[in-house]
Every structure is written in structure tokens, then in C-alpha cells.
Image 1 (cartoon, rainbow, N blue to C red):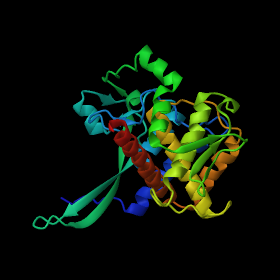
Image 2: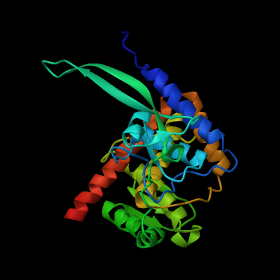
Image 3: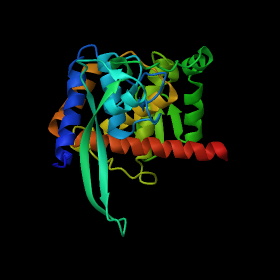
Image 4: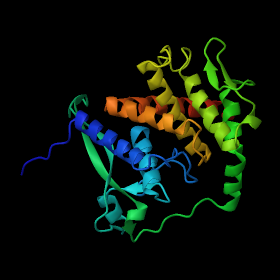
Length: 291
């Protein structure tokens, strides 16, 4: 029996990137960023674990484009083990899975394999009881942004309000934001703050990301993509829901699509850096909460 080969890394990157592009383009015009979900990050129905990195991003975008109510996913095998069956004719979404071959004696990695694993949303199966959404008290906390307030405070970041622009100022290591009242609502405020907070993590004394690119350069565009994905992850984690598109909505989508179409690797690299930024902030706030 012939052993089935996995896809090359380039093939997996191409497939996942194409999936994201298709999901965005399918809703261009009324597509808003899918950072809104009371049940947080997309998760696996079998293991209960949240998807991370580019898989988290692609499943969030796909869920939003397909208008699936919940971000619960699994492979056919996993759904079957839960007593559920994927409905006939349903189209799979794909995540990337990295596998390693190790030497049996030294346990050293001797090879890396990539594959694109097909997964299906809970809305695409029957025989599965979807867990209930948070109760009204949790919803009230979500609406009041209590978790977001506490999280930002624990980061220790310097945040100054005033003026009409939002940006991170490396020379002063400070985040500059317009007054909170200048935003349409709390969700818009925190979506912007989390974007700048992701930039803040890239400072030399923190994660040391390359942030010297000039406006219009590839480096600048890449860092903006990292910050936007980081904001996506943080909004999801904190229960911040912003259904209203930004005023620069069309330009924002155009920028994403240009980067995605220029390189199959871009979204993987950006999602990885955004994931590191989110993990850094979570670890930082956990330490300060415990202190």
C-alpha cells in the first residue's frame, strides 16, 4: 500500500491563502471584520482547544463569510467520534497542520511535513448539540468591556488621550489615542487600542519586530497587518464586538487583499507574529495579575 504524501509547505500556504482571499472577496462591500464572537476564538469540538495562528484567523474569516453562528469546528473523523455526521454536500474549510518526523534514538527532528486538513463547522453537521452561549450576566460583562479595561490596565502600557489620531510613538514608548468620546462606541475604541497595543509589543525592549518601514513600504504594510490581526485576536479574547466597518473599510480590505495576493507566505508570517504579540500580552498581564 502506497504511503500518502502530505502537501508541500508552499502548497498548503497557497491553499490557505486562497481560502482567506475567497472568503473576503465573497463579501466585499458589506464584509466587516470578524472580531465579534461571544464564544471567543474558533475551537475544536473534540478537544475543546482553541485554534491558533493562521488557523484561528482563517476559521474566523470563514465563519463570518459563511454566517455560521458558532466557531466550533472538527474533522469528519472527529465529528464521527462525537456521534455527529457531516451533512451531504457540505464544503470543507482547511487548516494547516505541521507534523515532525523524529529519530527514534535521539528524538531529533529529521523531517517536517505539512498538510491541509479539512474541517467542518458545527452548522454543517447533524447529531451534535451546540453548547449554550454565555449567560446574560456574562453578556453584560461583555457589553461593559470590563475584561478589556482590566486587561489593558495590567499591560502597564502608557496610553495618552488627545488629538484626532491613533498611533504608537516609539520615541516615548506611548500609545496615543483620541478621547474615548470621539469613538462611535466602546467596541470601536478598544479595536483601535488593541491595534496600537500590538504595535507596542513590537518595541525593541519587547518582541523586537521590524517597525522602521516608511509609509507605503512593504515593511510598513506588513506591520499594519500584524497589528490588525493582533487586534482581531485580542477583541475576540476580550469579548469586544464591533459590527460597524471602519470609515476606511474599502481601503482596509484592498490593503489586505493586495498583501495576500502578492505572497502566499505573508498571512502565515503576519498571523504568527500577531500570535506572539497576543501571547506576550497574555503572559505579561497574567504575571501582573498574580503579583
